Length: 83
Image (cartoon, rainbow, N blue to C red; front, top):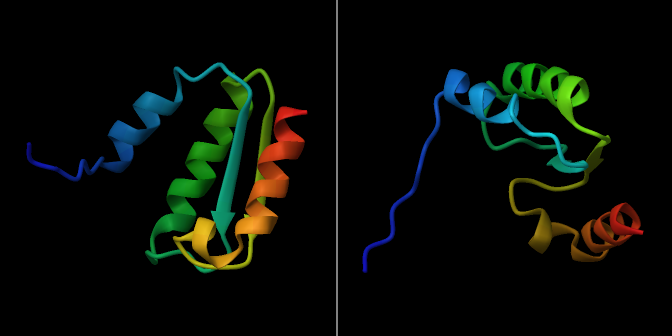
């Protein structure tokens, strides 16, 4: 079995997001891994807000690996979202 990283172009990502309807929690790092993420974040946020039943965006201290940087804070946000 081989593992493969799937990469999406910005337009592909937005196409997928526009079909999302479920309640959605997005936890983002304050220090993004890529410089161009602000454009993607803004476009995606507009789409999430327009289509999702409910949408919550949370910024956490850390980088791409939030589950390693701030596991307790991340877990608290997830638990709150599901309750």
